[in-house]
Length: 317
Image (cartoon, rainbow, N blue to C red; front, side):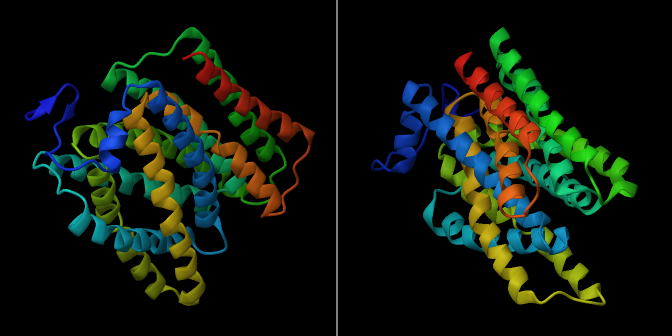
């Protein structure tokens, strides 16, 4: 790629700022620790984000309100604060946009057809496995034997949690099969966007340029569909609570997705993706504390297994 030194483009000469500090940490132990913290923060926020989309509103409307919020919030930063993207970034943004549209469509379909506590673990369980494979193909990243053991332990906990929730599922059983197929397909696109977003944020000189323009562009499509869907409804939900939910999601989404994108620039894509999947633990806790679902000793043991797998991956790196 033209105008690059090593793996990343050269930033124009300017005074030190947050981007300079972040870039200075790439490939360092401090950068590794920061990436770990960012991945775990993304895990918690992603579980909250998933619960917001699955809440009492139609998932398509919730997603549209969320995307509109973060698209509008990102626009001033993209247009007036961060450096403009390099010319070669526009095709990358186009592919990123298409991948995320497909991901959000599949996720909304899965949430429409299946229970959150079943669908979410399946999505998050398939995502890291595909991401580790994708990171190897795109970036040449490899996992040690110990780390693969950690991945296996984490996936056992995630899919065990999905199976446990499935066994005691009381609703949505008639659409369960299609919901699980959609969940696996969504997991595949989670891996695809995680890997390609990592490529995109590494391709531009300033990582915050990628983030600001990504969220502005990404927020442009779903609100249009959500508005058309809302207008066609016989019983339209009140816009006030829906937009309030959208505002909350619009704040959480950039923090969650932005954190994992920055983590993949600072450190290994596969490790960040696996650590993010501790979001399943946070999702189960949200189901218990917020959605008032029952959490017994078996689910606690499965959540502990997920956390143990993430620890093994981190310690084996």
